[in-house]
Image 1 (cartoon, rainbow, N blue to C red):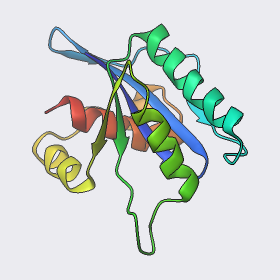
Image 2: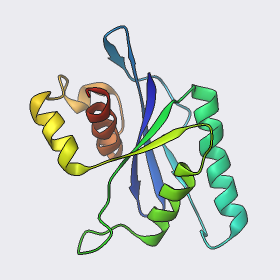
Image 3: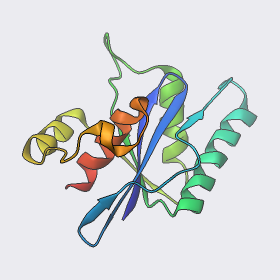
Image 4: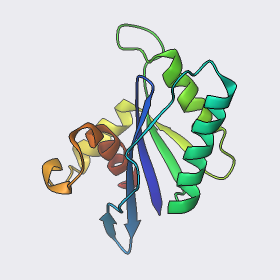
Length: 140
């Protein structure tokens, strides 16, 4: 199974591809690690963002997008643009999208800690949350 962990920050969808095959997890190379939604008020930009993500899913044979949950209210709530990004991903008809709750991820990671130091993955530092989200989903 190949999934894409997604961390939405501001107007960026930060990505991490992860594959679970034959009992092993791997991090396939990907042409992009961040897709930005600029000027979200314009319909054409929303369509371009959604097309880019759908094309990425098609090209890399991604079965699911796993998005880290963000609060809807309060001090640490997500932005309106972030929720638009989330909706755009959920509305791609060819890929399932799952929202991973922070509580569920903590429980899974406590039971199955990540076996490798993040620095050894070769990913960029800003991808750590997307990596953790993907890992927590796959160890289910």
